[in-house]
Amino acid sequence: MKKVINLSTACLNGSHFQGRILADASDLVAIFGNPFKPIQPDKTTMEWSLLFVDESTGETIPATVYDWKSAPGFSVGGYDHRAVEMVQQFIRGF
Image (tube, rainbow, N blue to C red):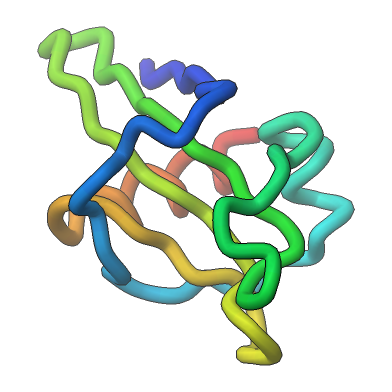
């Protein structure tokens, strides 16, 4: 079982683009709650800073989900590919 924490501040300095997901903004709001004010409002309008916790291992995996400029879908940032995997798994299990 995995759980997610929606961080109220952007504490993911140094994270970067890992992949993209196709999702509707309304679905992401239903799953992750309201997005936070973008750090770069000239580049994004919606942004979530997430911390996934794998309860079986206790490992934490940070991720950001954001709409980058006019690119289709949503970008996922993190420190490695597991950020995208965790976001996708959480959405599928919701």
